[in-house]
Length: 335
Image 1 (cartoon, one colour):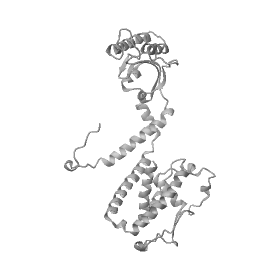
Image 2: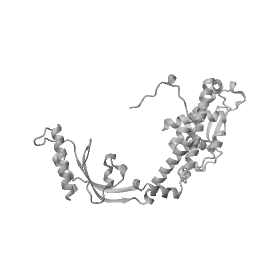
Image 3: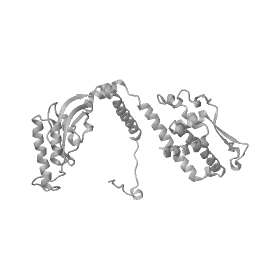
Image 4: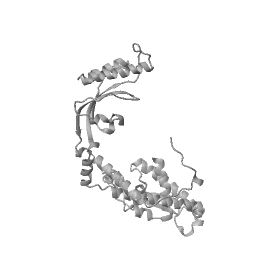
C-alpha cells in the first residue's frame, strides 16, 4: 500500500505545482469520517499544539516564484514553506495513513518531489507533449476517483426502512443452523480387509462404511462416537476426541453442494453427501434466523454496495464502446 500512495504523492505533487492551492481548497470540502479527527489528535499529542498556519516543512533554497521559471535555480535566499494545514490537506487527499511513521515518510518524500518538479519546470519538461499527455490522463484519473468518492459518500446513506425491508425479503440469508457433522475420508490411510489400498475397491469400502454410519446416525447414535469410528475405520484417528459440532452456520459457510442441510428440520439427519473431498453426514440440532440487531451492519454494507453499483451503472449505461478488433485483437479467455 505504501507504494500506491507514494505514486499518489507524485500525482498530487504535479497537481500542486500546476494548480497551486486549488487542490487543498477542494480537499477542505471533504468531511472527515466519523471518529477520524479523534484518531489523528490523540488528545495530548504535541502536534495538536501546532497552529494551522505554522510551518511544518521548510525547503530552503527552493524558489517558487513562477515569474521566471527558465532561470530559476537553487537560491540560498529562497525557501518554500508547507504549513500544517497544507500538509494535512495533502494527507487527506492522498488517503494516507495518519500514523506518525507514514507522515514522516511523506514529509521526506514530498519535498524531494517538489525539488524534482522544480528542476523539471526549469528545464521546460512541463511544456513537452509527453508531459501534457500524462497530465491529461492524470486529470481524467483524478476526476474519476473524486467522482467515485462523492458517489460513495452519497450511497453510504441507508434508511432504516431499507434495512428492515432487506432483512424481511432475504431472511434466508440470515438463517443459522447448529449442526453435527461426520466426515468420512474418500480413501483409507491403512490397508482394509479384502481391499486394495489406494484403489477403487478401497474407495468403495469407504462409501459402504459411510452408508453404515448413516444408518447408525439415523438410529440416534452419538455423532462423536460415529466420527471416531469413521476415523478408526479409515486409519486416520488422532490423539484428541473428535468434535463434530458446528455452531450457528450460515448457508455461505457450507459448500454449495451441502446447502440442502438447511432444508432439514431440527433433529433430522441428512443423506450421505459425497464429493471430491469425502463423504459427509449432517444432523441439524437447532435452526433460527439471526436477529436484525446482530446482522444490521452486515445489511448496511450490502445495501451500500448495491447502491454504489446502481449509481455507477446509471452513469455508464448511456455509453457504449466499439473496440477495433483488428487493432487490439481478440480478448483471450483467462484460465
